[in-house]
Amino acid sequence: MKDFTTDLERCLEVLHAGGTILYPTDTVWGLGCDATNDNAVKKLIRLKGKPGQKGLIVLLSTERDVLQYVAGPDMELFNFLQQQTRPTTVIYNDGLNVADEVLDSDGNIAIRIAHEDFCRHLIKRFRKPIVATSANFHGEPTPQNFSQVNPQLVQQVDYTVKFRQQDVGIASASAIIKWNGKGNVTVLRK
Image (tube, rainbow, N blue to C red; front, side, top):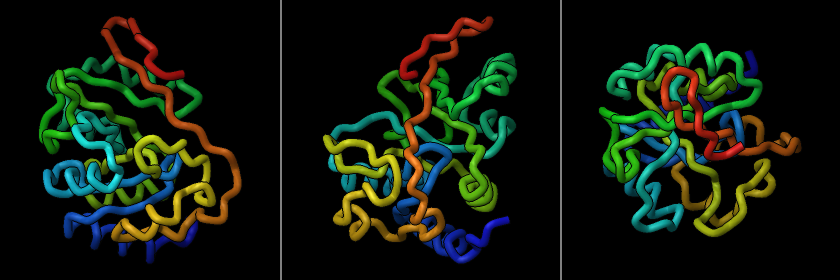
């Protein structure tokens, strides 16, 4: 395992205190907070500068975790996800047990099961979903690696993860789908 113990400990402190983090996800760098904490989510939305935002992606570490945040998910979806070659965010109907602003205006929730080591360890230790919205101010392009993150944003979060800051690879956002059951998928973002 790569040594990101110090980053994990600091992130956990900040998340438990209702703060915001800037962290590497399984896709692009993200802004995160406790997805179950209304005040933390509102703080993150203000930081991002997108007033009235409703609906945020959250990360979980296992398929089993989805059962705590979605009313009656179609289990066939998990077979579909295992066949995907890139990170895929799923819009589920009837999200529950998260802050109101995490849900979209229809009560749906966007969840991605993280497959990156740092994220998985963080989520497992935190034992709750973590918001994962791109690390940029509203209207700015999504940074494809840490070097593209606006330095003003770095200064405004409560903690910025050091792990993977030197990565120069070009990351892209996840695919987003809406699962309509029986293998019927609507692709919202490729």
